[in-house]
Length: 232
Figure 1 (tube, rainbow, N blue to C red):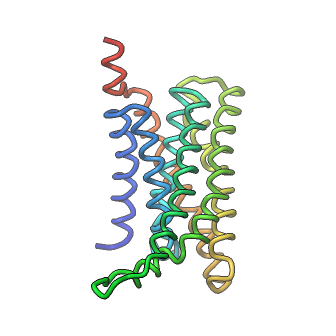
Figure 2: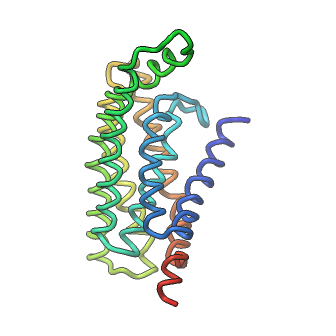
C-alpha cells in the first residue's frame, strides 16, 4: 500500500477517532486521545518516510490531531479545560520518558529476545521526548492562547470557527515544528535531510490542520453520551 494512501487513511482514522471518543466519553475521551497522541507520536516520529515525494516522519498526523483536541475543548468548554489537556499530556510524557529508561536498566536474562530492539527505540526517547516536551508545552499553550485571542477579536460565532481553528493551529504548529525538529534532529541527519524534514513536517501538519476544519464543525453538533444523560 503506498504511503500516500496510508497518509489519507490515517488522517481520517485519527481525526475521526477524536470525534468518536468525544461522543462516547465527552471531555475524558478528548483527554485520552491527547495523551495517546503524544505518546505514540513520540515513537512514530522516529520513523522517516517518503510521502508525495517528500521526506518526513510518520508521527506528523497523529501529533497534529492533538491540536484538534485542544481546539474542541476551547470551543465547547473553555480555556481551562483546553489547558488541562495540555497539562495531562505533558505530565504523562515526563512519566513516559522516565519509565522507558527504567525498562532499559533491567538486565535481560538468557530467554530475552527483545532488549536490543528496545534499546534502539527507547534509546532515542530522552532526546526525542525532551524535544517534544519543549515544542509541546510552548505550541499547545500558544494554540490555546491564540484561539481565545482570535475569539475575542472576531466573536465566537460559527461563521468564524474556521478562522480561530486554522489561525491558532497553523501558527502554533509552525512554532512546534521549528522547536521540535531542531532539538530532535539537528546534527543527527545531514543538513539537506534536516531542512527537508523541517519543511515537510510543517507542510504535512498544516495539511492536517486544514483537513480537521470539517471535523471541528462536526464537533459543535456532537452531544456526548454522558452529557446527554446528565441533561435528561
